[in-house]
Image (cartoon, rainbow, N blue to C red; front, side, top):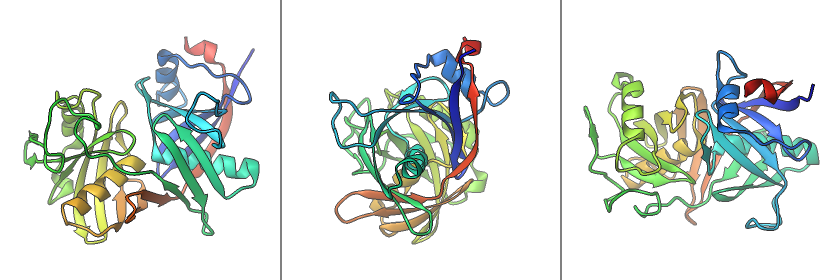
Length: 281
C-alpha cells in the first residue's frame, strides 16, 4: 500500500493538511481535496497545501519552495497568509534558517521567524483597482454598491485573492452564515470573494470574522485580517499598525509606508500521519 505523508498545522485555528511533493509526487484531484478536507470522513481542514520545488518557468529562482493551495471545496487559490506562515515554520526547521522565501501563484512572499517564535510574512502591496481585484464592473472600491440587511458599502481589496470587507457596530448581531455565501457568490465578484465583517474596537484594534471563499466560516484568515486592516485605515478608522482579533486569536498587521502589508502571528503543528489517496477516489 502506497501512502502519502502529511502534517496537520494551523495558524490560530485556520488549519491545513500540508503535503510535500518534493519528497513524493502529490497530484490531487478536486474530489480528493474535498475528501481530505471533510471533517467527518477525512482528515479535516480549511485548505490543503502542497509544497513543491521552485521551477525555472516560475517568477523566481531564489524561492525556498513553491506552495500550491486548495480550498476545502477543491478549488485552487493564489495565496493564503496563514498557510505561508505554517510552511515557513516547516522550512525554517528543515533548513535551519530564519528567513524564508515562499513562492505562490500570487507572487513571492518573504517570511521571517522572530525571536519570540512568531512568524512575520510580507504579504506585498494590496490591490485596489476594480478590474484587478477583480470586480465585474467599475465601482468605488472604498464603498461598493452592495447591501445585505443592515450592512452596506463594503470595501473591496485583493491581498493575493479577492476580499469584501463590511464594517458593523456590533459584530455579535451579524449572522455571518447567511451573509457569507450570499456575498461570496454576488454577481459583482466573477471569481467569488472572501467576506469579512469587522468591528472597530479602538484605533489599533479590530474585531473580525471571515467567511472564506470555498471554505465557509473560519477561525482565522490571514489575508482577511490584512484586508480588514487596510480597508479600515483607508476609511480613517484605525492607524497603519493594528491588532486584528479573530475567533481563533490575534494577528498583528502593519501596513507600512512603502505599501507592503506585514502580517505577524503564531503557528502550531497538530499531528503528522500518512494517507492512502487511492481510498479517496
